[in-house]
Image (cartoon, rainbow, N blue to C red; front, side, top):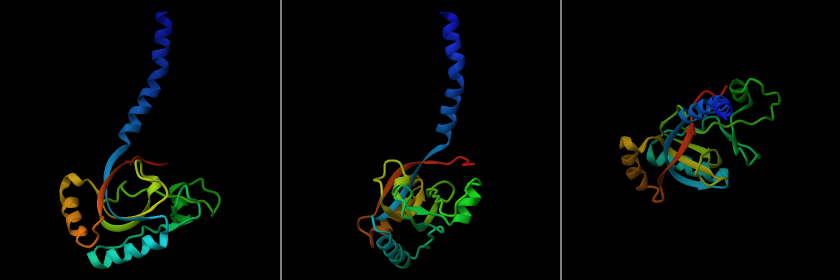
Length: 164
């Protein structure tokens, strides 16, 4: 009996280490959102308007909409190929959610399905990402609400470790 318990313990050690590693790769981030839509063109119009009225840079991160509703947006093939070296087809899509190493105040359009706890299938216009605890996002929210009354901050857990 003791031998079986010892064997079971030894066999589960790698899984415990993997679970710990995965938790270390997840980080909570906050997103200041001003709009969500199932229609990319609608989201783009709001993003452009917001950039002008708030005087905040618009950075679409080279993303464009794709017909695959599971992914919603994709980087150009050449960028996907540099991220995932084993890609074979130029029709392959890839999307990495904002919040990994690109926090800050700039307007982008993101796909909600890539974020835990967000409703799936929406193009969201994000004005800022990072941690609202640093107070700059809270003060930016106050400024944004003067132009976009429905603006809000929502949190998600983002995978931040190496993807190769």
